[in-house]
Image 1: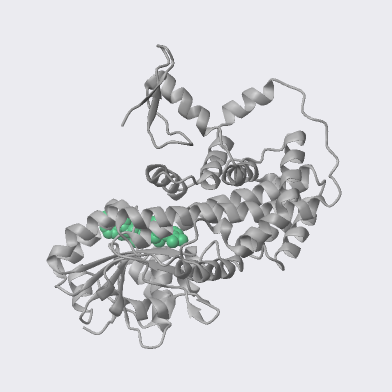
Image 2: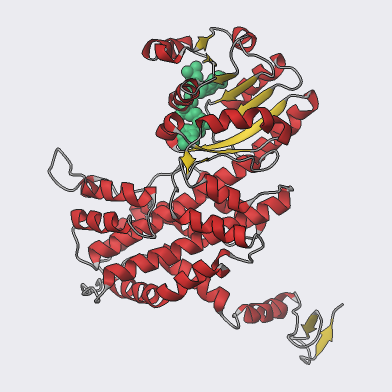
Length: 475
Ligand code: NDP
């Protein structure tokens, strides 16, 4: 037993994570993959890593020093369950099984409950940053017991991305907390990408800019408050030219967006938690709409008059930047609301500022912005919404007029902006003195006697709609 950490599953994520671990002082890394050819390939390509390789799971387990710690990086779902079972049969109390795959947090809760009685720790861990992050330093979101984090924490800290001198890893909470927070991260990522896509579309179709010009705009934005990895790569994608045709790369890509499901999970779970995450939902729906080719063809085929090109109003590019920023604040506010609600429902003690901090490096949504967000929660952990934090409230106050102009211009020009407009409506809903929810309550009481509360007297009440329309107090 010589290795302090093991990795099971040596496809792209597992082998990169194993290489990352091996490159850090003090780690000796055991590796195992169901199909040995994959292990052999890794050993041949990276002799410098000094991997301790095994051909059988028994040898792999024997190569681990106690407490044995193994990170599983195999196909989520059945593959993960199969490997968990193999390790559980061989591990002893105090040993740690880490699932670093993209598991559904409900599965993680269930797996932890199943394994915990044996005294073995099961730690569902969100890992963000894709292949590159796994190799160079991801953002890591572990759940599981505090006890397991004592062993695991330093190992994960050794391979995590570093932001402002701090490793991007924190013990998020027990059982499924890590995978839950990773899910919300991905949901926010969907919203962020959609908003950036809308900004591009506006700059092109209303602003009249070509992709390379828009790339320059994004590059300039990347020097300001919008700085983020996604803005940076967007500029790169827009600047890229297709070698085959000489056209902008963006114009040779089929405009139907794929997805792997974590955005949908975020929306499904937020619906269950009763948390409005319109930014994520609109992003998920926008990808779905893009794939409805028959419907798109049918409606386009109607040949209905399209709005004639609208000239870009003065200051349009700056307006779009402000609208993007304000909409992004809303998306994050909604994402953190989901974290708060999830923590309450599942009994996790999640430090929101710490989550914002570990998202500053390594992960896809990494951004300067997260520093401000972490500061906001540090100053007041009990914010009713991120929108009330002074910095963000000021940003929205400054950007509000621009945001409205952009939504109006886009609507007149026929440019779809589900993200921008839903975010603005959400903000307007929160800032409205009265909402038409009062009317909805009236309708519900009319057809279903669902009752309502009065503004002036504790209730609830019901009006006898099909009778004399007098009011009765129902409780
Ligand atoms: P894949 O998801 O493609 O899975 C392939 C690996 O799973 C192989 O090592 C394969 O072994 C193993 N495997 C599949 N079924 C079994 C089984 N029944 N028993 C044992 N091993 C099995 O690998 P990736 O590297 O792309 O991803 C690994 C995990 O990381 C996944 O959960 C994925 O969702 C997640 N991921 C996370 C990303 C991120 O940014 N965080 C990005 C990409 C993935 P064999 O070689 O024998 O077939």
